[in-house]
Amino acid sequence: MSDELDLLRRANPVPADGPHFGDGPLDHRAERRLERLLAQDRPVRRAPRARLLWGLAAGGVVVVTALAALLGGPNSRPALAAPRPLTVHAHSTPVPLTELAELAAAAAADGSPRLRRGTHVQSWSLGLADGTPPVTLPEERVVRWHADDSRTELVVATDPRHPGRPVLTDAGGEPRTVADGHVLSRTTYPPSWSDAPPEAPPPHTPAALRAYLAETARTDSLDTPELLDAVRELLDHWMLGARESAALVRVLADAEGLRPAGQVTDRLGRPGQAYVYAGEGGRRMLILDPRTGAVLGLETTFGQDAPEYGVHAGDVMEYSAWMR
Image (cartoon, rainbow, N blue to C red):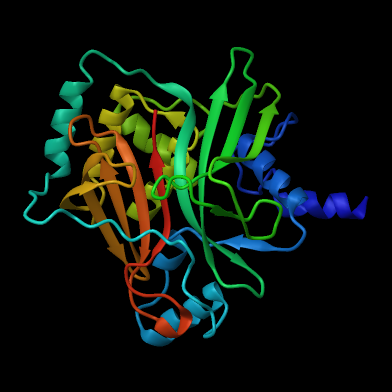
């Protein structure tokens, strides 16, 4: 019994600052965390989201100390199979978010496509295991909801950059290679429902959507790193419709420090407009569809060199590419 209680405490299904405390089934996030804990033989860590790095004070000693804790010491090798950072096309013209917001609003005039519950995302993330070098773990995850409010989640090890090649995974707690397309998990969850973000349907007006994202981030004052974290959380639960995407671009247009960078081709070969936020400790690049404003991807990279720890400026910490 003590082992099971310890697992529940580590999963933390009802955090102290959570939006609801009622009895009922675990929400989507808690179920995934508990499932991963049950599958682990020893601790395996993913690199923390970049917002944990924004708070680092500028200065070599602080940054090097943080990177040492992150990557495990000076003898660590660079991440295996790490994707190269996306680059902006030479001579491309940056499109201001205010201009893209107008394009997105026009594209949403007929309301199509519509909001859909679930997600389809290809991700690359830095995985860390005690005593082993960091590795980059590519996965594709599809979540489909059913009429009775149950859902099915499929997770596949695949890297579209290298079709047919073996893929790294840490499923089960030990990094190893599996065949491209190997099914890591296929899980059906019982019916569940919540009226709190990000499980609740997102609104399609800018002011209401900003409040929704602030509640997702559990903050009253939503800064840009928190906004980008909340956008990721939203897209891991919902496939936005045209109206929601247009509202989101309006919200992003007011984000401080999110600047247009120009045209890129994302890791699924799609053209997009890049918007960059550079903070202490790293950089984020948000990729939006140039016609509709739909979010295509979000990349987090390290902000400066620390070769003694296997990290260089521009190395990819994590990347997500969302699809419909």
